[in-house]
Image (cartoon, rainbow, N blue to C red; front, side, top):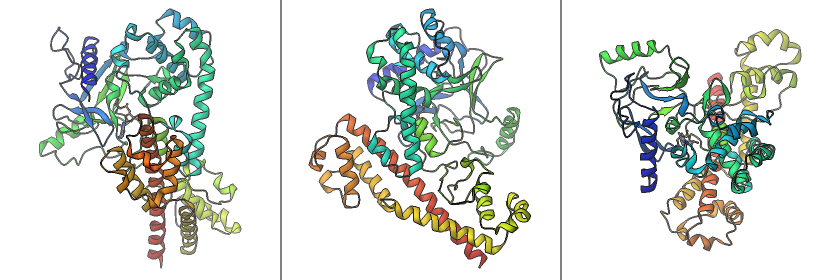
Length: 481
Ligand SMILES: C[S@@+](CC[C@H](N)C(=O)[O-])C[C@H]1O[C@@H](n2cnc3c(N)ncnc32)[C@H](O)[C@@H]1O
């Protein structure tokens, strides 16, 4: 964190303490004089270069189920709280047809427009200045995703952002926001803030922005929280189990609690002092994470690879498309396996074998072999059609990392395997030739490089799933022979 960001953070934490945000697990404040920071009892702001950058670390050993942060309802930046401003409310109320997230995006821009006059000013100045969510991707970065479905999702995200902005302009003009805040660029920033930082609240589908609570970085939800945590010993296991039971196995690690009018956050597992405390925002594939949050997880148990397969529509229509995918370990999803098994069954036997197939059972060794061969063939064809291989993508990521970390002289980079794509990057960023890389890249080009990196990282995960699927199918076939 730079010195300026550090001092802004001190101001935010002090402001937060004064308005009742606290990481003190005891219910009553320990003193009537508000502390100079809302953190320090359970959490501390820290930096995690490999998992989200700025985030929250445990300031002591934390136990699963412990209350670690509470934020009063009044501190939340919600549409309702912003529209206490009657002038803003009267403009907004004239346009009831806008979606909840359009309304919250407008509210955020209206607060930003107030500058120091905004009650949330200490919070607003610490919001990221740019985002890498899909609507912020440019054409070159979108094409770098290589997978048709992902390119389609990205293009749609941009079209949607633009139409949301156009529909919202009239309200923002009536609110007389500065012209800079009326631009599509500002809209993209504000809507990415909403998409990547809001938390669920029961009274508004758009959710809320939660000062300090939105500093938690993400971990994919895990079915088995921490019964087997290695640093738990002896009686602690029993105590922790009781504690977990008392919190009735929360499905989320944070939520708004009407009884106390507080947004409360709980430790999802045990944390050692200094460890990053993470929050499960939800169950997301890497494409979802990229679209809404601007990052991906290299190991994501909820990732999915969708593959275009020819399956009789009468069979595939039994399931919605989003159920027909390959899991990160290469196994087809339950629905995809059922559909493929039935698809490989002669028409006259489908009715009689249907029950077995829908129960997820193997129909016959011959049938299973047909399914595995079909899947393997399709994965091989798709992998071969990509302009780059898994190995190329791994090397490209390492080249991009070297450039991002300025840890190498560009002349020494071996670009033979990705020259065409590299030239595409230079052209997309108005750079004339590779020699230009010898000078420092502009901030704009560096941001494009970050997004290109994300696209390559995403397609690599996709290809690895297909490659795992080939290995899975071969294993099944060899076990049957
Ligand atoms: C709610 S904010 C979390 C705090 C954020 N790091 C900050 O500096 O304000 C969510 C954003 O943090 C980043 N992030 C969260 N979890 C991450 C993770 N596991 N890996 C990489 N980036 C992550 C993403 O940019 C995401 O959009």
